[in-house]
Image (cartoon, rainbow, N blue to C red; front, side, top):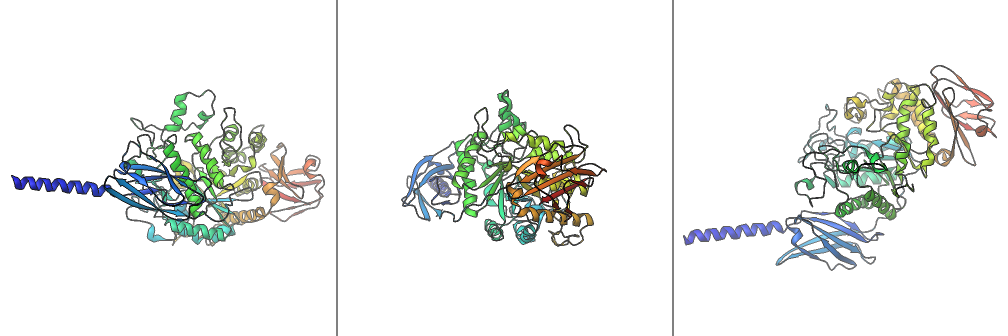
Length: 615
């Protein structure tokens, strides 16, 4: 009996030892590092480890003070509020964790403040949007990675195809030669999901590049190489939701970290409820708190700890890697006041930094609600530097395929731009023909190269910051009705064995080659054309399927003409467009080189655009 009791006592001591040992481990600290010299000296560390919430913490690092400790209903988390004084120097902040006789030491990296100004994006830029998984497979060895649930399957339109950061890096020369000035990547952070993880919008780790794309160091190398080629880089971020495979979901930091329901509850996607003066509270709540999809838990940004975590994540990526911009996914879906504070904090820390919010509305007034310096009747101010101009994009998808009327055809552009009074600065809007969520523009034209050229001529000469979807330059196709994977097909030549190679032009069709030559020439002309970047805009009411506008400043003027008639040549007269042509005697068609020696009267062919430099 005594022997049995001794064994039991030994067993109890062993269990106690195991329990203590398991407690003496810190699994994660996020953000994983911070910086000296930040304008806001505070940083909040999320510390995760078994029963870490029961520990006290101290530090004696010069210039660094622990102001408060925040504990939640989950003992496995502890939030440490640090203040980094102006006298603090880079080094390792020694954090001492103590609980009774148990002690833990954690060395937290404090890095130098990043050197050099942030450049941001503006109207002189053209943004090239690409999906990392679908652009180029530079390193086939990381197509399948141990511990990553979804394996590569290039035969599956919704599967992983193997594109990666090295593939992008290998072809920066192609992007540069196209004469775009910046790149927006769809998300490339870890998405360790069972299926459809290629698109990147189900993040499972906010601080880690998905290993099937490469490493954080690979991204830093890519940014450095791009900047060396005078290319800017923009990250895609998501604050509204995470992936169901996120490590939080196994052990939430607090019960209110994500919005929870008794059964799966989807958002109503009605972002108009935020500015609707008559909206029912139930509709507003469902918009904000409902899940975007079954595998996308909805974050509760009203929780101050969640807010701090997300804001600091953005600042960390900017400071650590020197990115030039952020495109924020589903911008109206999270708590809108938190998003306003986020934009203000980021742009205060990095004044030239560029942020564009995805605000997907068909109406101009709803889009303008989120614009920078917009004074709304409800008092809301977004602090958001730029918005996506979906009304203009959606109009382009219809305008060239229908005859003009009071509201249709090219009148769509006129009416949308006539409402620019709604925006404090409409030239900040990001404009586009298509993106990763829309049927590709060439498909929407009915595969017509003449319409393609007209639309490109418009989107690259009107007001705003143009965004260009990868493959548009070779008239790639994709129909959303077949599934999103068909909008995001592999860029030809990005994989060994591809039958055609858009990087070199090998085996491209005549249509693809003609589209590329036209696009590259137009982009190259726009790149150094200040009058297109910052010039004023004057438009004339469309008549007889003819839309004319001018971009002008004190030094030069450009006349843009779109003839949307299916088979009729139109005559342009000085009398009708005297306001724009006054003072000019002749002009040159930018794309054809044709000299127009008499601006009093000249013609334009059907389904044609003319961009004329006036002289």
